[in-house]
Amino acid sequence: NARRDFFSVFQQGCCVLTELDLTLDPNEIGPEGAVAIADALRVNGVLKNIDLRYNSLGDEGKGVNRDAVSGREGFKLKM
View 1 (tube, rainbow, N blue to C red):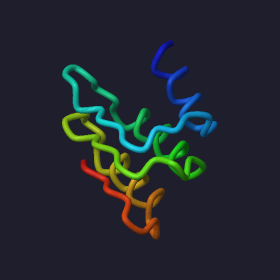
View 2 (cartoon, helix red, strand yellow):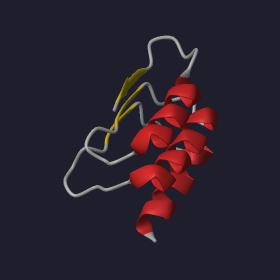
View 3 (cartoon, rainbow, N blue to C red):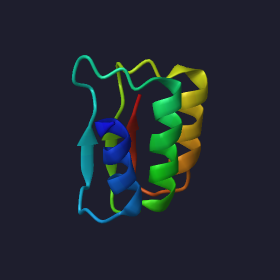
View 4 (spheres, helix red, strand yellow):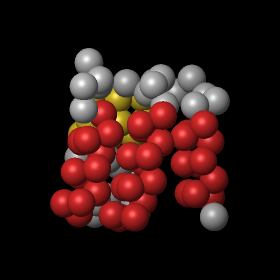
């Protein structure tokens, strides 16, 4: 599906995307998608700002994304 393809590209770090807003409705990423984003954030050092508000990430999804960017100075994570 398109969402999985996007995150695959994002995870590879082949783009120079520094800011990503995923608050568009309806963008129900959910907990499973949040884990995929966290996996991508761990390997993509280019992104500096991501907005994941309004995506029903759940506590687990929010936690894994916080952990993924922990220690990245200046990184802005909105959930």
